Length: 337
Ligand SMILES: NC(=O)c1ccc[n+]([C@@H]2O[C@H](COP(=O)([O-])OP(=O)(O)OC[C@H]3O[C@@H](n4cnc5c(N)ncnc54)[C@H](OP(=O)(O)O)[C@@H]3O)[C@@H](O)[C@H]2O)c1
Image (cartoon, rainbow, N blue to C red):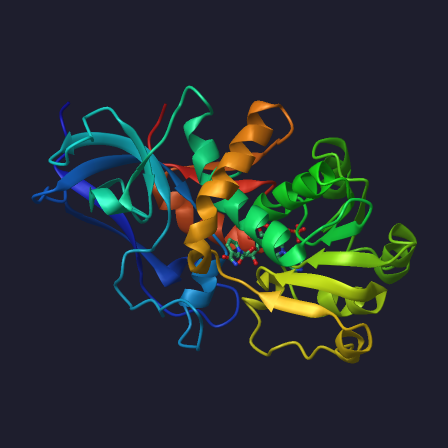
């Protein structure tokens, strides 16, 4: 295969204040990475665009390292090996890895995982069958501990993680209720992902609608958003409810942190609120991967993708995703089919 002369990368150009703007990013051309000993060269086909990048753009204390100006944006990709000096990896193999916002990446075996396109399309390994689905499984099963008959409430329910959480909750025999932005997203959450109900947090009657949707209270609140939605949910929790706190996407662009008003409900109802980060739980990845693959193979796990074309459009896709433009997993196609 003939390689182009240059690689394209998106680098971090400026720290945002509030909502990121396109000038926070820059498209640069660099030489195609040289393949060192025990490395392979990967041509990336699809890029995963993830909310946590926004946290890394700020010089604030976080579980993830702060991004340096000039650094290539981090992100998982799927692609094909084009040259390999790794035993067991050959040109043409499909792989997934954290290879960054770029067309080509050089990587060692430990950073690559082979994927099976006979089992699922390549993009699924960035979404429901990849780290997105694993996040949903680890958070729900390990920290949510759902029991059949319980009510599981999920925010950002039409998004990548949230849509998987509700389906897993249903597979556990739970009642799954979503929270999403807008009537059409809520309809999709019910009709396509099979949630029992979904509440539009943008509606002026959100608090009353939420109370009506969970008449028996909430046993597990899988929180992807934090902020005012978390506040509205706290009074609806049952005694000994569990909150796997997966993320705070409503706060990532905020210049002032939201002050939670109903924290006393956590005490009153003896609630367990547990922040978790996927990378701390690598021991659970095999079990999660197997469970997700089984559910998908049995036709019991659906996923949606929002695909933006072109590496040069990745920054705008990221900005728009934080504002809720996506349904399911936000991806960028790096190479025309
Ligand atoms: N803990 C971990 O290891 C881990 C791993 C992966 C992801 N996460 C977290 O999981 C969450 C979901 O990630 P994802 O990749 O699945 O993204 P996603 O849900 O596919 O996309 C983000 C969604 O957030 C919603 N949103 C944006 N602003 C909001 C606001 N002010 N209030 C309520 N909802 C808002 C939007 O949906 P609406 O249109 O419904 O507003 C948007 O579609 C994020 O917080 C992310 O950081 C954590």
